Length: 446
Image (tube, rainbow, N blue to C red; front, side, top):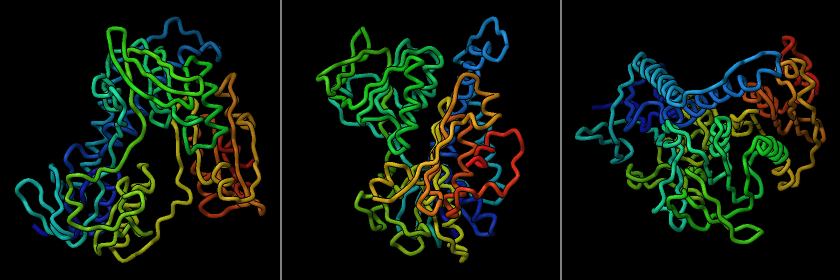
């Protein structure tokens, strides 16, 4: 069977590339060994946000009195929360399948193996292609810790399916995934402890915002152990013991459950990648250029596999760029303004440079910072709380980075991304009329 484009992996990069190529009239075959949507849709972005929204609704009910609303009893049903999450995922997976089918994309269920740049084998069938786009995503990193094989720990996948709340939970890793699960379980009344090896949570996020979010969750009862290196794990009838080393010496904590959340790494094994002899980076990732081309003509790598930015929205854009290049309408990929969001409550969102990265690069900058209370809509909807709106500019007032703590940061950060990507000045949005009242109006206050 011959196709113009063969795509391995049906996650955000894979299904985006397949739809775009199919819409352009190319013959496309897409290989996916699990479910369409990849990790993002099935066990990442969408399911976690579905759970977090349920927790947010529960939080709103518990604190409704702040808004003059009396709720006699607020409770939750965890199995129903998990069931709703599964329903949302199923609906979106079916939606992706329908979109691909509408573009005549052939979907093959199974594990693909690369024979050479023009040949892919799946099960007992061989498929030939002119172009190959590899989008195999990433997997959870399980660190090599003494005793880890003897304890019953969760990965994010296990935490998403759990229907019985533990009394206590230790989370190893204070990154985005760790903090989102900390938010979810803490809202439902679980005693949560986050163990982080770095000196602050959310490495890569503006440190001021990360520290502010940590302080907010500490007030809600989450315990944070920073600069703490886990040395060993053990389990007995009391629970799971996490031994760690910090400035105070050797210590340990015990909890009913343990969630390992120390990061992700690209999936590279079992694909036949070695048959392509692709050039690698210093970190052993597949090297790609600004068009997502690899060192082998006709082979593209999009998404987590190239290791540039392990985010679903980055993967989507990379896939679009790769297909445009195949079609001859080349457009370079820009990583200047890739937004990062932490869907805690409150949300944190960042785009562009942070103070820490600018200082490391020796770039002069100025901080323009406003409380989120400059927005009347924010004040109306966030009783008793505030947030941070922080913009970094160079000497000519060109925006270098935008960082927001406060809801709905995830919906606002694209405005900051526009300023960063297009080298806009601080007063750029003063030329636009925003609806009033909206939280986004804060961009006009700069």
